[in-house]
Length: 107
Image (cartoon, rainbow, N blue to C red; front, side):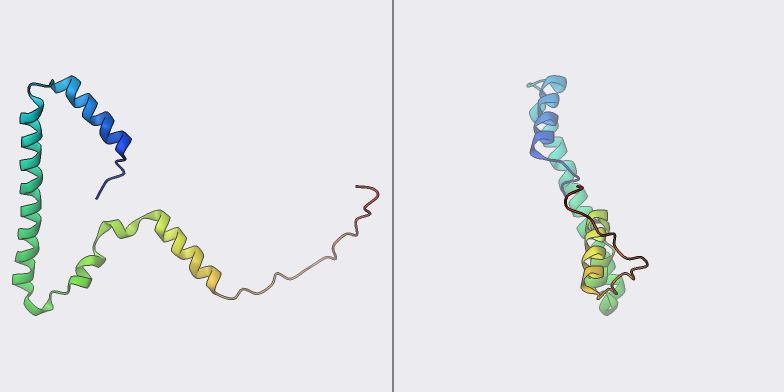
């Protein structure tokens, strides 16, 4: 999960951290951040393991993936809706009036 962080944004955050925290304390804070990220990952894996243990055979990894909030990307939803509607045959629009005849000399 990148949360929309591009290389430019990460570089800017790094530069701000160097200026605000200072080069002396930056390694200490980066170690704390790494420990925090590791602990969050371990908690997530532990929660998933507990769910698997409690549900037993009823646990379906595919159903777990359906709950992933990343699947609700509005761009992907619109793209899927457009491609689905493009695959369906559409009736030609009914013409209510005849098209005007254009004189090429007048245009």
